[in-house]
Length: 349
Image (cartoon, rainbow, N blue to C red; front, side, top):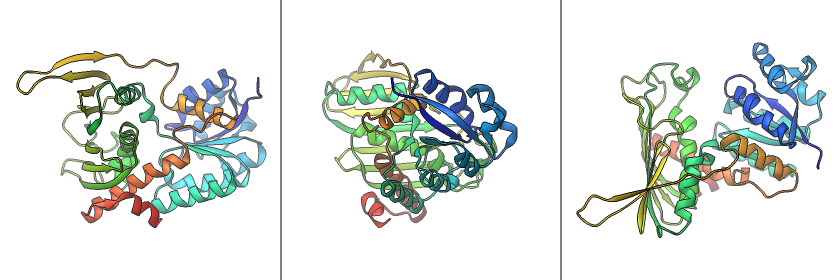
């Protein structure tokens, strides 16, 4: 049995609490990693890490610099706002630490590419927790598409709609930042589209806006078309200021139109539909895959196994740079009204 890896958790409040209660304790139970320090600029939330991770007072810090100087670690986890990601990565590289970070890689394409170059040049490993692509229902749909049982994939339709129109209903900072829907929501869905189609994106055209009743500083609604490199097309509807939550977080509607069947995922129910030109289609329910864990706990497990000599996980930095390219190309499209060539956009940076 190999010695557990040592980890420093950066970010304990907000989503960081999920890491402290669900992700890191599981790594400890599996014998993969133990947490040696926790960091948050708000000292009031640090006791959460003390209670859930069994840390002592001298393992709690309000400064990442201090934590990395005082505690030797194999990797850090970054669960802070995207604008702070690059600074945390720089600190990790300075101390020879691998990196497991929340999405996106950073707050701009330029910063994403800087991080990509720095990590590669340092010879260290980094992965990004694009959790929703690795949820049970999306993994089940991906497996059905790639099974070959339904023929070739033609196109995807994805709906993600929410009633989070009131200020603060989706976290206050998301109501205050530009391009909130794309940066904080659609980035996950772009990653799902890449996985389901088995391809990176070639082109994207995005129309985004905020309705008068949406209490957002940036755009909360989008209609987006994507052309993948392998010829698959994607049509995406995203909205955070609708009158109802038809398909919100973890309950997406995704329809995969395949050669010999329509695969439909709706609020975690998966089925295949078939029929002739005029009759109502016949539907058959498909079971979801089963495994011990999904989303961030599974991603953290794969990351640790990678550091211990296992295979590179599908959410590595090298893979995720393509997701960021699609995200920021879509933002450029939304701002300019033009179709953006995603691969050319990435090459520019």
